[in-house]
Image (cartoon, rainbow, N blue to C red; front, side):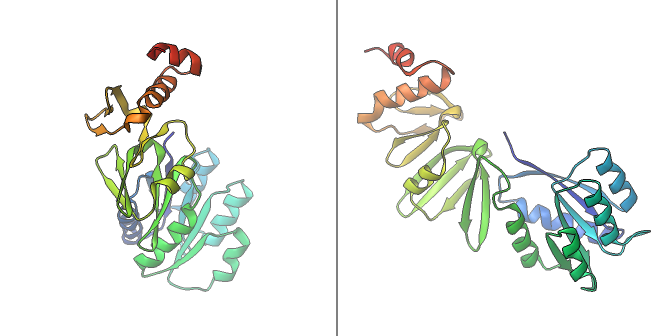
Length: 249
């Protein structure tokens, strides 16, 4: 299942709403998270939506709003049972101490600094989604959904994560370590240099043929084991012995 984040931006300034939205776009452009953003210029509308079960994973909340302070909005949300992340936006740190009372995830000062914004997002999203490969690189954290990975290829000192959207993420680690981290029956080590997502395999000849016609190599001594793994996965609840009978003795 894809991990879709629901994010709200509540600020009476259209410029500040746009600034946060743009930073979110930049932050997520190289990541495999799917996300959806709703913008609010009025805090009462936000409160009403959440009371009607329109829950959000993250709320960016201005301190100085129309009728209520952001701190007061946060208290109402917490009292109503909201347990998501709240990040305060403000030009002053006047309410920084009070933000701890509502378990705020962060406090971003205006004008916004992209590096600080990214650091806070990394902190909030670490471990956020199950079935997600968490990759650290270039001082940031990448979250790559298992669903989006077609196969992973080892190349010298790095691994290339080939995704269904055509993107290839480069990480400097060993394929053995990635294989240990991903414990999902969809993924099969068919070659010393390849870890394949069986969901995207459309057929098996001497090698795996993917849904986009790319070829993923199978080591010769593992052809039978690879066929068995492929048939077991695509036959659903079929037992190993049943699958083995399908490929012959």
